[in-house]
Length: 425
Image (cartoon, rainbow, N blue to C red):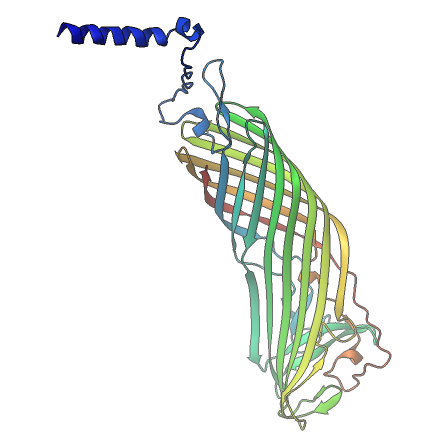
């Protein structure tokens, strides 16, 4: 028993000596590993680096700072946004006892080019993080919105219903009647829609790194696209007291015609980003605010296309289709494009909760504004030469020169809520 106790005492003394500074200086002594620094917790079960949503790579206790490995985050969120309405109010349909001619007694406006969209749903995904132990980071984000629409239908009816325009030949207000007692039964359908998407790639610089507060300077490149459509369809059936035409040829009782106008406006923005992001954490809760603006140009493409179809009857064989509608007739149809200066500011504030060291959830409010955008409804031109309409007897295309108008611009404002989560690796 004495031998066992003596042996254990000797081994313990040797281990104590080998771990001492003196033993480390002796030739041939075994190297030792320094103990890992300890990061204190504030009672939440997470160190300060774990409370900042995955952005931080440096933290410390007291006067010391501890470097941690690079952390990369991925983020996904659902967007529930509201889009600004179309502001133009060009008359599309009129009624009244004077064949719907604007300015005559009893004429009322039934429809115009203004729009009122429903909510715009979408999603946003991103990936980013700081590079090594530096203050330089990089992030890439992309967002896609679904389609939102607005629509109104009038008829079928035999009550007065007309499509008003300004006659550029007679230099006066006029109209094309599509419904009138004893002459026509007709209907009109107006549909508009909006879609949007975008992406950005941003280097950022961590200017302030603290246990509770971080601040990043954001730079980079941004792309944003918004497409809008404005379509008008009218259908008319000729009765005993009415006369119209197809492709310049008169048709009478029983003829059924369909006129389609399709206007699309495509906008593509390219710009340089500059902005900032600040984050504050307290325990497991955090709040982030981001503000940035992209400065650049927007490429606008407007396409006007229309057709007129003889569905059946009226002494002609149908169905048959000819180019040219009403608002998009053979004189002003076609495609035009322009490049214009624009700015795209964006702001976002969100409140979140750190579930674990590698996951959090958040909810926030976001606004986005494109200062220069071709809106489809703004492209409607009431100035029409009636001789270019397939539904009049004087229709002809001789000496036709297209007069596609210069693109008219408006703006787009999106605002709403975002709900998402972040995973940090």
